[in-house]
Image 1 (cartoon, rainbow, N blue to C red):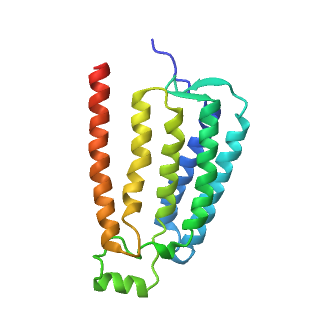
Image 2 (image 1 turned 45 degrees about the vertical axis):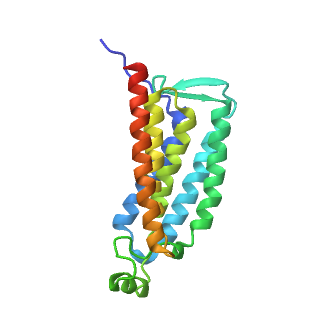
Image 3 (image 1 turned 90 degrees about the vertical axis):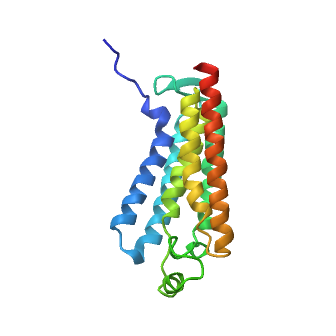
Amino acid sequence: MSDTPVLQYSFLAPILIVLGGAVIGVLLEAFAAAKRRAVLQLTLTLGTLFIAFLSLLRIRNLTSAKAAMGSVMIDGPTILMQGTILLIAFFAVMIIGDVDNFTAQASAVPGSDEEKSALQAGRQQTEIFPLTLFAVAGMLLFPAANDLVTLFVALEVLSLPLYLMAGLSRHRRLFSQEAALKYFLLGAYASAFFLFGAAFLYG
């Protein structure tokens, strides 16, 4: 008879809050009006990071505690790293809040009529905000990982949104897409080597 899994949600609260905000951001992309989407996404992202930081302050006095059946370790250095990540992410979101720095339509070929019409129509890529939250969630999990599987999951959750964001620059579109492709290939090779090393070590 197996024991019921115990996750210790209070210890995982900062990560879960950021992930929840990212999911809500995805829903906003699907259902919110295009004109209000940028303001709603920016407000949601900043609010999510702020609430996650407050939840982190509640556990700041923990010396050492395990969560998620031992796959996550919360201690002093982890809390310090997570707090630093949340603060930097908060200010970074305020910087990228000017969505005019991102392409109007990611699927358009650089220099095409489709891209020009998207620019003239004033379209905005507000997907960067939920992508940012997903990346931040991976960053928060990374220093708390207590085994290689959790470390790998955190690395992928961190990296995959960044592959997309690297290709969304409005200026120098070709270089931006080239950077995204190279980053993706490098990340794929790095992930493969990581898994191979983990399997070789413990397999």
